[in-house]
Image 1 (tube, helix red, strand yellow):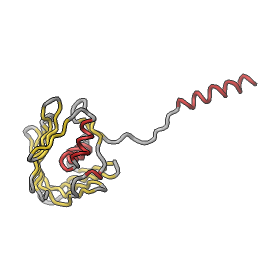
Image 2 (cartoon, rainbow, N blue to C red; image 1 turned 180 degrees about the vertical axis):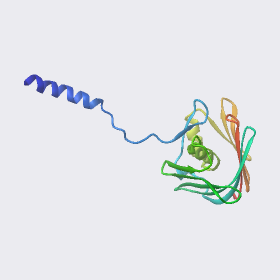
Image 3 (cartoon, rainbow, N blue to C red; image 1 turned 120 degrees about the vertical axis):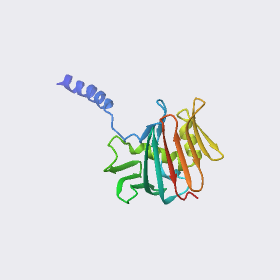
Image 4 (cartoon, rainbow, N blue to C red; image 1 turned 90 degrees about the vertical axis):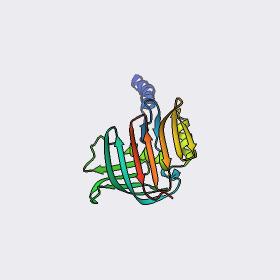
Length: 185
């Protein structure tokens, strides 16, 4: 009997010390490069709240896609409703408290909403918050006269040009771009 008690007093604490508890899920991230893991920033880092209609053109290789997006973004999160030119709902994206919700009757399930959120953050989030996040993963954020550049190993991989009524986001590394037309003043 004393052997059993001895075994339980030694083995049980050892087993319990090996059990790990999950304290929460890892924050959402994307791969900006094949080795640069960008964790999405919290919504509080938005530069200026956005509540507008945007005409969106997406180019990927030789394909172009046009849509209208209703965008509401502030310190509480990001909401986007994407519609075709006739006003039919094509997709809805919500980013709140580190969680995304994405539904679409048109886009394939392979579309990952966190990539859309990351691109949005790179365009519209606070420079210093982005700069800190990108430096930790080996990327450089550079402010230009007309926007921003993200640099990896001395090569511009992402370029963002901004004006009062247009934002052009170009991902040179992945081969796609967005043009957003709206009121960005």
